[in-house]
Length: 275
Image 1: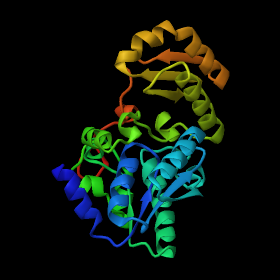
Image 2: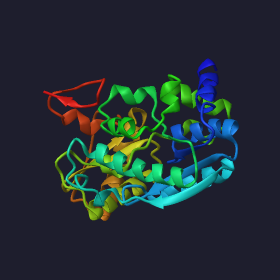
Image 3: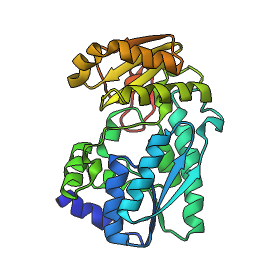
Image 4: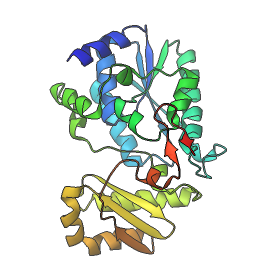
């Protein structure tokens, strides 16, 4: 609760704000907290693109209505950004820089003082080149400043009766591809279709990672047995989506799985790959 009070004080430093709103655990909690401080001086903006599933957009729109906060949807096609489709380890930097440059322009047009994002303490523990873009553009990360972790945000979300307290973690569809594999709209659509189909089989936390024609399925450790029991249906779903082969990852779901293949080490202070 001390961190929650600190968060409210951090938000209160600004007269008004725009929040990059995905409808996930962190941005929904931030929106709830900010609405309590800023009231009508708050705008939620969701950027839609081929890397953002339609189901997630529908969810974000519904949550914004529940929060009773002004909400706007904009198009931000990351795949058209130079350097993004080539899928280098700097992909997220290019994406975040383009997206938040766009959001800053909206904030300026709406006379909003600050642009907030939902970064947390957990984001410092993995390779996140997008963090560099946020710093360059002067984007504020109130949850990070308050020292809040993902688990603490879930706990506070439950106390605030936010349904996102138990929502599975999510990342954009571009994170499903190994660095170096060119990202196309067709490949993104294939991954989205496969994930939605596997999700309908009853799995809660999952990823369909794309390795050329192979779909590598990650599910939560406690769902591994069920995945094997349903392996024929999972394979059929992936084949219908356009994959030739499917494989179950024996390590299960974990965040940042594609970063495991990066050579060298990642600096925790500047989010760059170092030799």
